Length: 180
Image 1 (tube, rainbow, N blue to C red):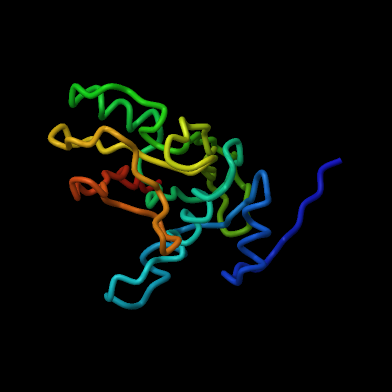
Image 2: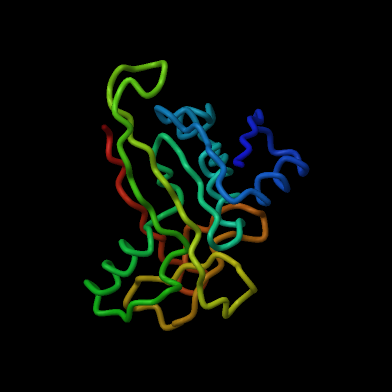
């Protein structure tokens, strides 16, 4: 028997612990409501997408997250990251990214706000080499000039997603948002 629970999102410690213990949370990120539209300031405050992405990166390998909108703050999937590494003549790695992504289409009317087909995005935390910290999400720099060949923790000490290589300060490339 499968049980489903609906929780209103807040980032209190108890909610974060609950989310991190789940194997497959469903997060409604439809129409970019948690993206740039969720922050009304230009002071660099993290968006709600970034908070959700950070929590996903802290989940155990094998955990899945389902959304109705792409979560671009996660960066490139393992497939995209290794493709970029091959193009730059770098070695592929299980540490190139910490997740894989699948896209599926729900034939309309699948949700109440539209009669159109709806894309769903399934993100799966993958097992990595764990050379830094047990089950920690990591990524590899894809800058060919970076002399450090070890992974960077995907989540910093502040609990938020890292978007730069801590060794060479190269910005981590992200996927391009595809509007449907």
